[in-house]
Amino acid sequence: MRNAGVTKEKILDAAMAEFSAHGIAGARVDRIAAAAGCNKNLIYIYFENKESLFITVLKKNLAYVYDKLPILTENLPGYAAEIYDFAMENPQLMRLLAWANLERQSNVYREREESIAQKLGELEKAQRAGIASDWLTPASLLTLILTIATAWSAANPFGQLINPVAPGYRSELRQTVVDAIGLLVASSPSR
Image 1 (cartoon, rainbow, N blue to C red):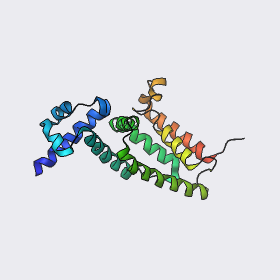
Image 2: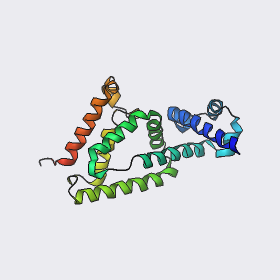
Image 3: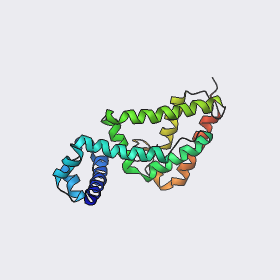
Image 4: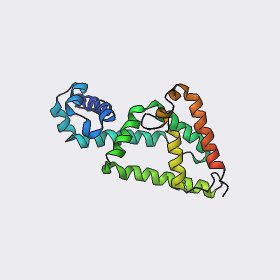
C-alpha cells in the first residue's frame, strides 16, 4: 500500500507539469506515465480518466493555496504582496489555474466559489469598518487586487509581454503591487 501512495504522488507531480504546460486537451497520459515512471494503466486505475486526474491535481493545489493565502483585510497591500510572491514562486500552478479557467472545469468551481465568497464577505466587513475604501464593490476590489498581484506571473498574458525584463526586478515589482493596492484601498476617485 505504501508504494501505491508513492506512485500516486509521482503521478500527481507529473500530471501537474503536463497539465500546466498543455492543459487538459493537450496533455497526454502517456507522457504523464513516462514522467511518473509507471504504467499508463495505473493512472486509469487510480484516477479513472484524464479529466478526473486534472481535477485531482487542481483541487490538491487549490487546497494548498486556500490554506497558505487567507485574505488579510487589515493589510490588503500586504495580502497583495503575498499573492504576488506566491504567483511568482509557483509558475506551474498559475498556468494550471489559467488552463482551468480556459477549459472551464466546473467540478472545481464550487470550492473556488466558496473561497471567493468568504473573501468577499471579509472585504465587505473591512469596508464597513473603514479599513478599505468602499468606492468599489467587494467583487471589484478583490478582482483588482488579484489581477494587480498576478500581473507579472506566468499566467498573465500582458505583464511579461509588455515588459519582458520585469521579472528580473521582483522586489521592485512587489513594491509596485503594494503601492498600487495601498492607493486603491485608501482613496476614492474624484467624480
